[in-house]
Image 1: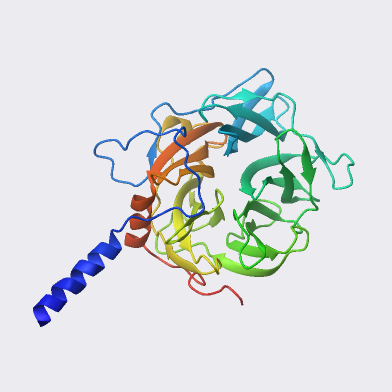
Image 2 (image 1 turned 90 degrees about the horizontal axis):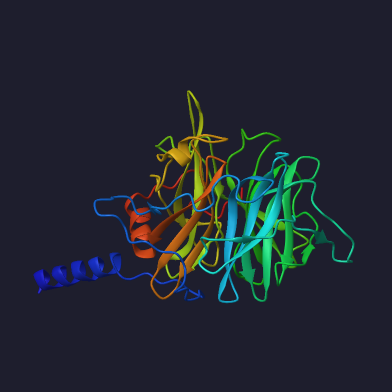
Length: 358
C-alpha cells in the first residue's frame, strides 16, 4: 500500500507540473501572427523568421518606429507606435492592420484633449503600452512632465483620445495597466527612475479607484539575482496576461558591459489577487540580442518587449519588441512552455515573494 501511495503521489505531482495552463478572460485570436518553434531551438521564445516586421523609414518623413503597442480591434488589429520623424523627436502614431504585421499608418501624430475638451498634446511621447479595460482602450506612454513621467489617455476608436492627469510625479517610465480591476481598483506597474536611466531599477505597483488618484504603492520586483542579465535595472513590458497560474508578466532586464547596456527579456508570475507578490520569476532570460537587427542600430543590443497578442484557445502568444531602438520585431511562445521555464528557472530576488509593503 505504501508503494502504491508513493506512485500515485508522484503521478499527481507530475500531472500538476505539466497540466495545461489556461489564459483567463482572454479572447480567441485565430488571425494573429504565428510560426511554429524551429527544430532544435531550446529557449521558450523564438523569433519570427521575417523580422523586422517594421523596418526603418516606414513612410515618408518617418525615420524609425520601434517600442510600439499592438491590440486586437474590431476583428483586426490596431497599433500605437513610437514614431520618430526626421526631426528625431518621438510622438505617438496610430495604424491599422488585418494581420498585425502589415500596417496602414496615420501619418499625423496622435492629438489629445483633456476631460473638458481642451487640446492637450504631450511635448513628446514614447514607448507606449495599450490595454483594453471594459469598453475603453487605455494608452500609457512616457511623457514630459518637467522630466520623464507617465502619461495616460483613453480611446474607443483610435481617432479621438482623452487624456488623464499624469498619474505620478517625475521621474518614471514603463507604465503598464492591468487588463482588469483587482478588488475594485485599477492597477499600474511602473519603474521609477532618475532623470537619466539609472540608478533606480525596480518595478512598483500602484492602485487607483478612478485613474486619477493613485496610492497604495508597493514594490513588486527588484533588480539583481545571481545572474547579470537583470543586474542594472528591470522594467515591466506588455500588459500582464491573466492565467490560471497567475498574472504572466514579460519584463526587460538590463546588464552593463564594457560596450554599454544590454536589454534582454524574460517573465514572471504574479499573484492574481495580490499582484505585488511574485509567485515565480525566471532567473534566466528568454530572449537576448543576437540577430543583426537587435545588436546594430540607433541603440545597439536592445530587445525591449512592449506588447503581446494572446490566443486563449491555443495558448499561443506573439510578443512585439523594439530592437536596437530602430525597428519592431516579433517573437512567439506557448503559454505552457513559458510557465514551465519560469518555474524551472525560478529565482526570487529581494522583496519579490512578499507584499512589497516596506
